[in-house]
Image (cartoon, rainbow, N blue to C red; front, side):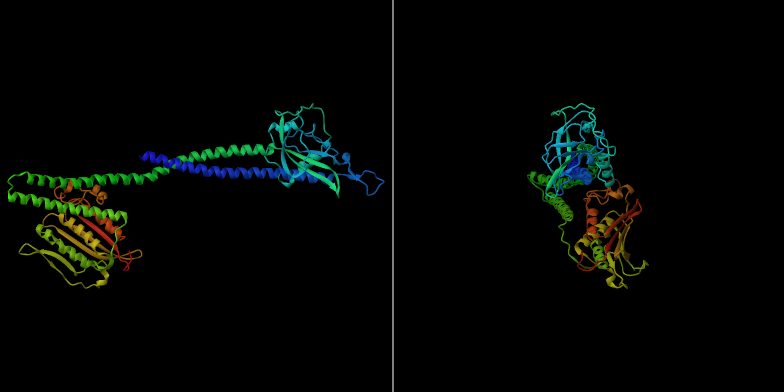
Length: 518
C-alpha cells in the first residue's frame, strides 16, 4: 500500500513538473525563434537602406529638366555578384512593371513580386551549386547567428554590394517540388515623388532561423528530459520522506489498536467467564456469587478507567479538548494529590514529602508536607506554613488535567516503590526564555527503569515488563502517555531519569502564563 502511494506521489511530482517545464520551454523556444526572425528582418531592412542610398537616379532625357527619372543599373549595382557563402544575401531589381532587370542570383526565383517591408517567408525553387541552391546545405554561419548587430549587418551588406558581376558557369537546375528552398524576403517599392522607379527585393536563407531553432529545440528537449528524470528521482526520494511519518503513524495505529483490543479483551473475557460460571450453578452459593460480583465490579472499574483514558487521548489527538484555564496555586494542588495517595502509601509504609524550594534554589524549611505513620497504621499529613509569597506558585492551567497529571506520577512512584521506601516532591520556580516556569520533581526509591526502556516510556500501552512484572499487572500502560499529553497541552516539558534499583525522577516544567491564555 505504501509503495503504491509512494509511486503515485512520485508520478504526480514528475508529471506536474514535466508540464510546467514544457510550458516554460515552449515560451522560451518561441521567444528565441521570434528573436532570430527579428534579427534576420533587421539585417534585410538594413541592406535595403544601404542599397537604396547607393542607387544612382538620373533623367531619362538629360536635356529635359523635370522629365521622367530612371535608375542607372550599371552605376547603381556595379561590382555585385553571387557568392558561394551559405548566409549570403541576394538582391533583385525589378522594373516598375514587375520585370526582373538585375539580380545576384544565377537563375530567377520562382516567386511572384509582392511588396512587403515587414518581411515574409516564401518557398522558392532550388538551383544548382554555386548559386541559391547551396543555401540548403545547412552549414550556416559558424556562430549560428543571423546578423542582428549593426556592425555585422553593415559588413554583410557591403559584402553583398561589393563583389564582381554574377557568374554563369554553373548550369541551372529548374525548380521542382523536391528541389526547393525557403527564403526570408523583403520587397520595397522605390519611388521619387509619385513616380515609381522600380522594386527592390532582398532575400536571406531561412535556415539562419531554422538551424539554430532546431539546435535549440534539441538542447531544450535533452535538458527537459534530464530535468524530468532528475525530478522523478527527487520525487521518489521526497515521496519516501513524506510517506515515512504516515508509515510510522500507521504502524503506531496498528500497534495501538492491537494493544487496546488486548486490554479490552482480557477483562471482558474474565467478566464473561465469571458471569457464565455464576449462571451455570443450579444451586448458587451466596458467598460464591458475591465473589463473582466483586470480580466483575473490579474489572468493570478497570474497563471504565481504560475507556476514560482512551477517550482522553483520542480527544487530545484530535484537538477537541476544551481546556478550562484559570489561576491555580500549584503548591496547594500538590498537597491535595498527596492527600489522595495516603491510603495506598500507608499500606506500604511509604513516606511522601513535598518540599518547596525558593527561586534561588536554596532548600527552604517550609512548606513541608510529609506522610508519617501513626499508631493506628494510618498516615497523617503535617504542614508547615510557607514563608514565600503565594503568587510565586500560581500559574494559569486546567486544574482537572494537572490533578490527573500529578496523580498519575505520584501513583506510579508509590506503586513501583518497595515497602518502607520514600517518594519526594520538589516544587521550584525557575527562569526560562520568555518568563518563569514552575518545576516539579517526583522522586522515588523504587526499582528503577532500564536505560533502553526510557525512550519508550511515553508510548501508549508500553510496560517495562522485565523489571516490573510483579507490580505492573494493574496498569494499562497509558499513564505516562496521558501525562505527556497534558504537559504538551500546557506547553511544558516532561523528562524521566532513572537508575536500576536506585529510583526514578520525573521532572515536569510548566510555564507561568497570564490568566486567560492557553
